[in-house]
Length: 248
Ligand code: NAD
Image (cartoon, rainbow, N blue to C red; front, side, top):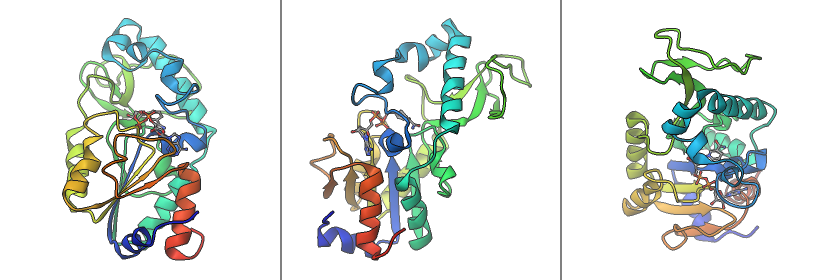
C-alpha cells in the first residue's frame, strides 16, 4: 500500500493519538458488524427485541440467551492484526488512547491498555432493577438467566441499548482525549451511532489530523484529512510498516 508523506510524518511525530473503533475493527476476527452488508447482525435479528429495554422486559430469557450465545462464539475468536497494531502503538508513542464502541473486549485481549468502552462490555452484567454490576462468568456452561446476588432481580449484559445513555465517565474521558489529541484515527465506524459519532468531529475541530480506515464511504469522508480505504486488518499493519519501517 502507498501512503501520503504528510500522513507518515504526522504519525511519526504525534505523541497524543486517539484510536476510535467501531464494529469494523473486529470484522476480520469473525464478528459481524451491525449494519453493513448481508451478514450484518441487524439483517438477521431485530434490534427492537435484542437491543432495547422493552425487548428485554418482554422476553428476558430470550435476550439473555442471545447474548450468551454471542459470548460463547466470541470466546472461540481472536483479535486481529488491527487490534495488535494498536497495542504496538501504545508502546511506541507517549499517550495513545483507545476509545471503542465495541463490546467484545478484543482490544483488551490484544493487550490494549486503558480502553474506554463507550457502549459497555460483555465482560460485565448488571441487574435490571438497580443496575448492580457483576462480572460475567465466562466459564458458565448454563444458558439459564441468573439473578442479581444483591437484590434478586434479573441480570442483563452491561451493554448500552438503543435509547439508553452512554456511561458518563467513559464519554467524559473520551471527549477529553479527543480535545487534546494531535492525531485521531477512526477505524471501522459507520458514523451512524450518536453521540459516539460526534467524537471525530470534536477532535478535528480541536485541530487533530483526522484519519479514517474503512472499506466503505461514511459521512466522515469529507472531513477526514486522509481516507484509507480498505479492511483494518490489512491497512493497519501496512500503515505501521510505512511509518516505522518494521513489522509491528
Ligand atoms: P456498524 O455495524 O454500524 O458499521 C460497521 C462499519 O465498519 C461500517 O462502516 C463498515 O464499512 C466498516 N467495516 C466493515 N468491515 C470492516 C473492516 N474489515 N475494516 C474496517 N472497517 C470495516 O458499526 P458501528 O459504527 O461500530 O456502530 C454500531 C454499533 O455496533 C456500535 O455501538 C457497536 O457497539 C456495535 N457493535 C459492536 C460489535 C463488537 O463488539 N464487535 C459488533 C457489532 C456491532
